[in-house]
Amino acid sequence: MAKESTTIEVGEPSTVTKSTSHEKKKGFVAAAAGGGHKRGLAIFDFLLRLAAIGITIGASSVMFTAEETLPFFTQFLQFQAGYDDFPTFQFFVISIAIVASYLVLALPFSIVTIVRPLAVVPRLILLISDTVVLTLTTSAAAAAASIVYLAHNGNANTNWLPICQQFGDFCQTASTAVVAASISVVFFVLLIRMAKESTTIDIGESSTVTKSRSHVVVDEKKKKRFVAATAGGGYKRGLAIFDFLLRLAAIVTTITASSVFLFFVIAIAIVASYLVLSLPFSIVTIVHPLAALSRLILLISDTVVVTLTTSATAATAAIVYLAHNGNPNTNWLPICQQFGDFCQATSSAVVAASLGIVFFLLLIVISAIALKRH
Image (tube, rainbow, N blue to C red; front, side, top):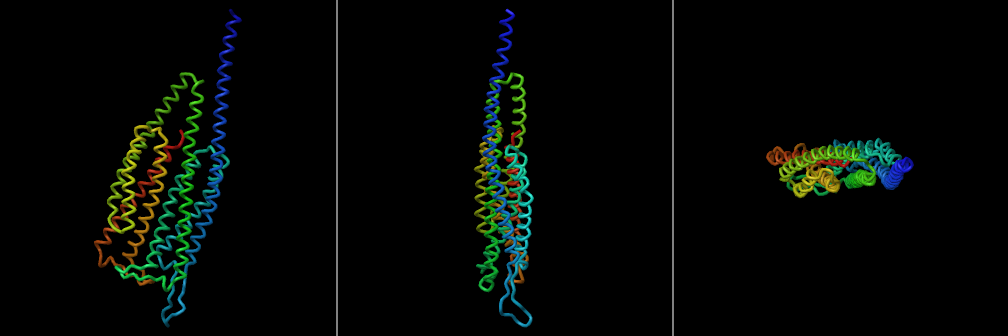
């Protein structure tokens, strides 16, 4: 009896130990595979940042050197055009220089994600920071693009004449800088997309490891994990409710804003339609706060839409500023003294759309935090 009793006591722990060891090995293999995938994404992230640094420095430098002096002049006047003659181009140079500086400062975080591919916090920091900087880059590029378009085509209704017929080289240089900045916008969208994918893989890996180990965990540990999941679900449900309310507020601001310029009206109308269509996904995240797919769809879509919103708002803001202040260097006179109501309406639309951008940034931050593994 004693011998039999001893055999049973030794056999059960041995079986559990072997099973636990086997499950741990499977979990380790899954984590290692995910780590290799993430390291590849981190290396590509680092290379993209290096390319974006070159592009942004080039764009800022090219715009900074945009200047042309006409060969003819009078005794008292020399005809010259430079980037500092346009406040929008000055904003472009400063903003893109800030973006380039940020990219340099972000390189250590990118290196950390290569060394520690399973680390979540550095990726989350990069995701949120890249989104904020994306809006700055897009606003600078879109505002400068609206002035370049005006310089090429003018506007007969406001008597703003095109100047690129006289200052061809200047316009060509400014256009090149805008194109370079637009390429950097694409790079930022790719960086954000990769950061989102990495964060989502964390959720998948943790879920897989949890399932593989659940067969060998005692009831007490199951109870603790259930309590932790319930707490996390409540936290995420609160974020989802805030997400839903922000979308409703963004719908109101975008519908209010879509009342002026053609591109602005079309872009903001698309944004408002997207927000309405995104409400069911937001409701799903309230009902199922631990669901990752709906949150990921919202995160990716919000990033694309915030880029469209920012470009439309910045382009319109540049023209509204010109309508209020004019530009004596190009003989573009202010028109708000004659069209006060029009300028007031356009200014209000820009302010409303700017609030929409803030709401989108908050939505992206909420989604990023919700996707983070607890």
